[in-house]
Image (cartoon, rainbow, N blue to C red; front, side, top):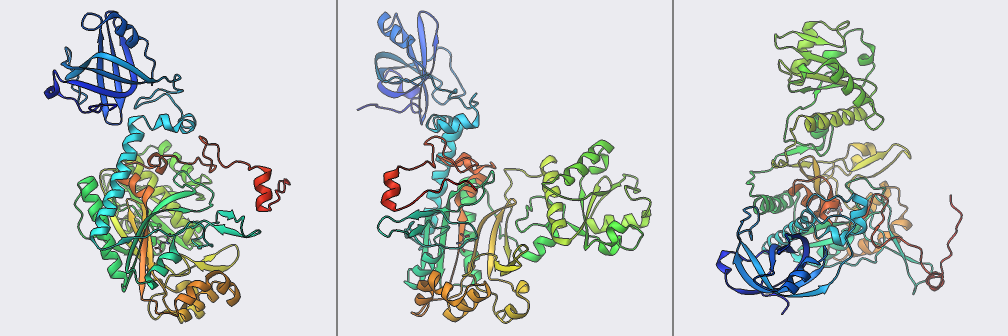
Length: 585
Ligand code: ASP
């Protein structure tokens, strides 16, 4: 037996007990006649004391020479500490060591294994196994496990069955590039790794499983942003014989359960907003509704004077920044620079200070009088003391720019509080999205999403206007889940593929199996998938999903610890009958 207790377990009630502990040496403190060692494992830290009087000079010497991160086993007696440490649960006791076994030595770690480490991100990723020994990372992994467990508890209780689906499959289009795997047994052919288990979960519904879920890895070969990973985890779900309302109900239940069990937060019925409303009010299909600053559309109150910038714009839209009237000229100039950064892309920004005395001071006083500006204040809901920020231009980009400004200002004003949770359903998404570059429509969610009842005909005349039975669950400005009611009729699915630009042959080659299945009694069905990494990060009150993944990849998609991806042996290439073209395009 390596240990009788773990390093977080011993209390005053254990005093005088003989115990055996095992763990890592966090640090040693050498006072000459005594040496203290902090022994750490996943459960905590216990102080060991080596004392030449009470044990032996030889043992003290061994204790003194322990290096950081040595793995040791000690036998000893639990005693009361002379100077207690109220900051740790084991702070009232220490273990007087009688026997020490070094189970393994350690090189000096490249960074300190402390909550606040001196190691930079790259170094910590290269030695992630050491990073995981640090409390913040360890706690995040434990937290993630707790969330997964609660998901399983809840869904099993609700009658969902966890079914595994294959990883070596054929493309499932979720809008990203596929990762592909060459097949040795079928030379010249490739599997695709699933972007999601979408088609399989639909087939499980045809198979009669009724309520499916899976905590599952998905793979999307996209250019990475800080909060994306090429492989990520979904809580993937599907239900048969449901309408949109049933799905919203079921997964509102799951989310409410998680908020309660994990965060102790009670939530009432989640508000709902249509996609169109979200775009008009927040310029964003995943609005953060923890704070106001809703958009005020201002065309009618701003497009009647000689100010050409506004007159020629498709949309003039503003927000009221609470307390912003006190911003200095320099601060406002900095805001204007901020919206003009290429990442945001606005051409400029008009502002109005709503003074405490009820008067207005704007950057366009030449064109607008006090009465006009009072109407602007009304349109944006600005009160005395606020600053109105106004952007204009083509509607979609202008909304996106103002949304970025709204989020930035809310962040600066401390309105995005991590301990507040504001869930929201966004519903009635458009079915199709126009790709500006190719001029072609593609599925906004995925090609299996059903249009709203009665809208199929619109596909011919106004494809962009067709709404889908698709929904997203938004939490604090993040999309944490998204799904749809599916098409379960072969004819409708074929029509959909046609509208998405697939020839019948292409549709058959890629999705023939699904259309075949639809001929054998496919029940009405629908589902949703949650991004587990992001959900865990938000519940944990943090922004980056990497912090909640044991072995994440960096922004170039590399695992710097194992050094992947990597070249493979010529013999492997030969076996796969693959030739590498070293011409770099
Ligand atoms: N497969 C979808 C996705 O990954 C989710 C769903 O429609 O259930 O976004």
